[in-house]
Length: 390
Ligand code: G3P
Ligand code: CA
Image (tube, rainbow, N blue to C red):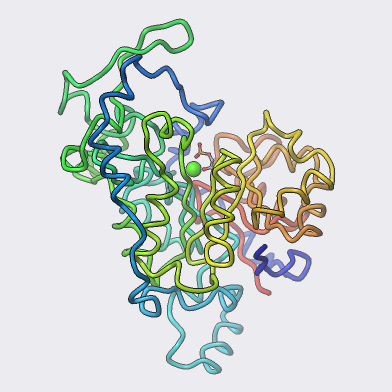
């Protein structure tokens, strides 16, 4: 169990800064992000689909553990100092630590940028991740899928057509599948090699000025994030990939080793999460004391958190829970149960389109952080999150 977060009750709100924050910028928080009432994606694979992916399986099987060389150079320094927010505290820390201070110490750990700053830039792309850092997010959340040749890439959907120009680039590579009684054509990530996916435009769908943005690999992201920002990695659909003979967790572990993140006890440079409990459990065993793991919980599965016993059982294998925000909104006592069990609580997803009775997404995030005491909020709008000081 890993627990390195200052209790919310110890954090002090800087109201004058909060009041200055509003939901700035374009209202693009609904860029498909809310279009998936269930996050376990459609599993209507073509009958012969699994047999079409020997190349993918081979690549996955050969991606064994690699050494932990460069461990020191690849680590984010520490998260302890990240809790500092105010100018005064910043100056004190700078004086105390001198040259060791850099931008990442100043980032806000309670702000997790969902697919990057995805209200303002195309989700899961480098422009979105860069903007999240510019908006002082302490952590960048992203999703992972697996290419035909066994490479982890940053994408939310298991198919490419919503966030890339795959229809135009590869018009004959789609498959007809049944979804909710309808036949629809889908372009599955696992049907495309990395080289093919890297030809795709992952920016134009969002706005023309993002034309040419590419789908990053997990390696790209880890190299970029080093010494810059923490990463929250979501493994999508590990159970579906298992039917294709691919283990995304093993690929993830190999990547973490390549980047020196499995060398010694964690400083939470990377956290791995999934909705798939068996994968989180396995990740907990695999990564113990090196990489924190989080169990994501859908609102429909709120019963997983129905009492202190169920919550503390999760602490046997995970260091945090990521509930849909309505779960803790409806049952705030879950936060206390989780903290008593040593679990962080990081609800999702805060965006302008789903603020309910709140006057702004900033006000909603403030309520969850200050009143409910969650450890961080996962948001499309990092810039709208209020400021804190320890
Ligand atoms: O970080 C949790 C959140 O990202 C889960 O929802 O569908 O955006 O991956 P989704
Ligand atoms: Ca996600």
